[in-house]
Length: 254
Image (cartoon, rainbow, N blue to C red; front, side, top):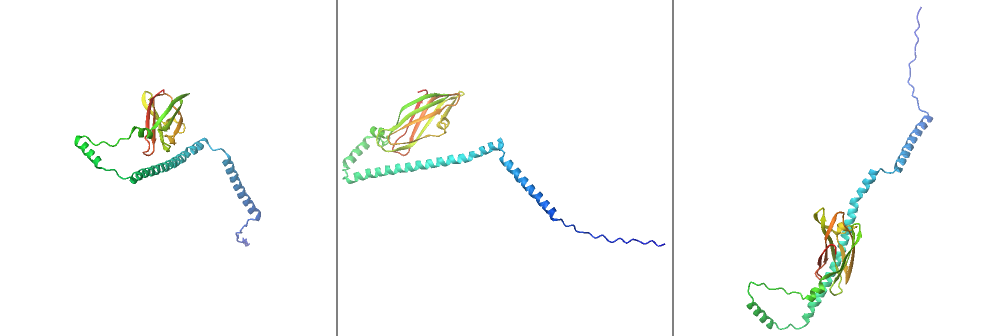
């Protein structure tokens, strides 16, 4: 008996195409993932920053504040230079007027002056140098700046109120310059000088000076703990050559 072999048809691969429902399911999962990520990012942004980050940000503002302070100082120096240029221009005009006035008068005879000068040179020893013309006491008093009404009041807790006035001897020209204040004393038994930058609350290096007749100065000074003051120093520095400054050193307490 013959055995008949069963013929098995070949297996053909079939391509299974996803249905529209499966595509919609995939798109829905992707959209849900994006929505979840956006919600988590929003919740993270609403949380307050940690203390370390806030401190780092506050520390990072230091250079910007320093640049702003330097810019303000540059503008102030530029303004002071402009005032100095105006003062110099006024002085040049006054000097030109003074030089033009004698030119209109006839020049005096120089023969008596020359004879007197020759006699002085003959009688004076050669080792003595010629003396420059000295300003009269009245001119010196008119151009010198003066300090008056100086006083220090204790505010307690190491604070003091310093008050004084600056004026010139005469005239109505405007005086522009700076006033420097310092305190000498002992800190832990060692000599130390405290400038106005250290003594003032706003850390100014000097007091701006600008007046026509008189300027009153009132400053609050705060000494550091353990500091023993000995002397108060005040130096007035006007711009230009029209006025001369002054320096005072007063024992503490006044």
